Structures are given as structure tokens and as C-alpha cells.
Image 1 (cartoon, rainbow, N blue to C red):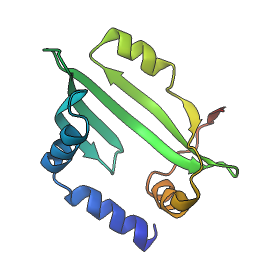
Image 2 (cartoon, rainbow, N blue to C red):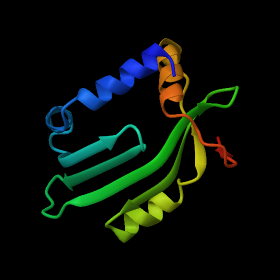
Image 3 (tube, helix red, strand yellow):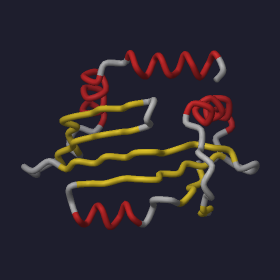
Image 4 (cartoon, one colour):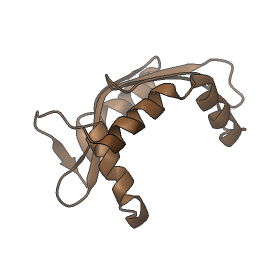
Length: 131
């Protein structure tokens, strides 16, 4: 692991969850409220609990075992496991799990994507490609 990706990993670990919740709620005001957030960079695992604007019930989503990689042409993201406490959202998640989704190329962010890809390396099982 390079020094840059190690520093990114440390920065992610040291960023307080409350700060992420506050910034997210500021940006997404009137759309969704993030009520709980937990990101484990080592696993990798992301857990969020949100409340849609105007709704009383929260929605829980857990995304596990995801990766970012370069296939030679572009960077892609793949999610191997994701669940929710809503059946409709589980059905939606089932359609994106296990497929490598192309990340749009932004020339200014190429070096950052390289670091993220190093931090969240893909594990070897076969990857299905989606364009």
C-alpha cells in the first residue's frame, strides 16, 4: 500500500461520524436526513440510516465487500453484498450487486481514483462488466 493510500485510510478512520452526518444533512437538507453513519475502511463496510424528507420511518442500508479497480480502460466499482430493511430497496440492490459499474472519467480526478482503487482493491472472483 502506498503512502498516499495509507494516509487516506488514516484520514477516513479519524474523521468523526458526527461530522459526516452534519455535512451530509447540510448538503441534503429537504431531501434526506442521515441519522446514523458508520464506515469501516478495513472491511470495507458502510452502514447508513436515513429518513426521507416528510417521512417518519428510517431506512437502513448496509453495503459490504465493495471494491474499486481499473480494468485497463476505466475505473469501476463493484458491490458484492448490500442489504436494506425495505423489500423494494433490496430488490433494487439485487440488480446492482456483483456487477462492475463504470465510474465516469474525470481527468482531474484520475490520480485520486488511482489512490481509492489501491485502498479498496478488488478481490479475485470473476467480475461481471456493465457499461
